[in-house]
Image 1 (cartoon, rainbow, N blue to C red):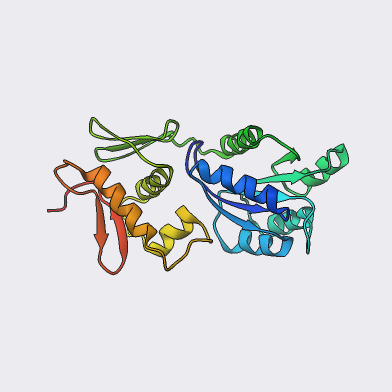
Image 2 (cartoon, rainbow, N blue to C red; image 1 turned 180 degrees about the vertical axis):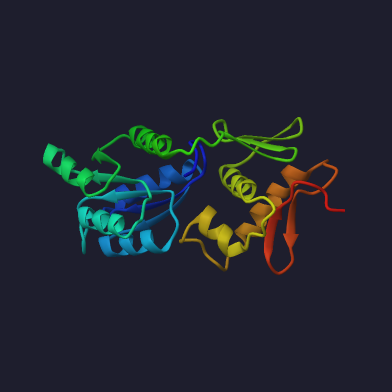
Length: 233
């Protein structure tokens, strides 16, 4: 389970377009990758076939309601934390949602700050105790402040560069294909014809490797990219 402050891959299952857009935009501004499903069956399918750090699940959905989706996911051993949303604020509705397997419950309308607080609480609850900082060789990333350093040099990152660097560091030494990067950093709505991954990696590489004795972010021809801890020469 990711630590608090880490960029996440989140599934939002919400049929109200304005609410879904509000949540997605806010989460993306926090550097998270967000996929949206607008009905119960699609949300259930995505939750079972893709890897998510968190599921935001509306109670009232077309096709299959949130309670039934939640029950199905738990019965099929999907253990991803679920934050259930509903316009119903009765005690019975809350109990029904939690009894179905949801981890928390939030009544609409809500302030986005409260929503983020609930997300952070769920992450702390499921945290394995990982450090709030990542280090690969001389490269360090503080996931609380979202600041990076290579040696003593501070690296200023955009929101997307932060998400990408964190993903590289969590998988240092492994070749990451463009498809894998797109799925975990950009989400399912990523345009596969776009060159934005290559452009973002290029910008990040300039920032990380500028003035250094060796390049940490490397292109693996025909395969993708990888972050290396040491110079292999």
